Image (spheres, rainbow, N blue to C red):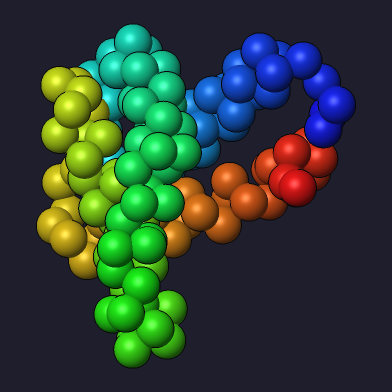
Length: 122
């Protein structure tokens, strides 16, 4: 899959993000999508936010991330998920910040495993 067409890779990443967000909504009662369109749009935005804004946040917060031995990355991951929920009207995170951290850990682990199985990691 590494040598696949960039458009195909993009569509697969989008599908993986959407699938993982759907799985999170099935496992965690605090994650809710009111429509399929909201789920698909959330998958797209979550992927774009993680590809663009998250690396900038990691660089800007590098000192505190080093001081916390990497635990601040959990806060960044949760913040990216909360931003996605804020941007998509029908995507709801109901459990508060620390529950969002737990959901973001689940999303990170499952995304990593699915991408690893599909051969999408570099």
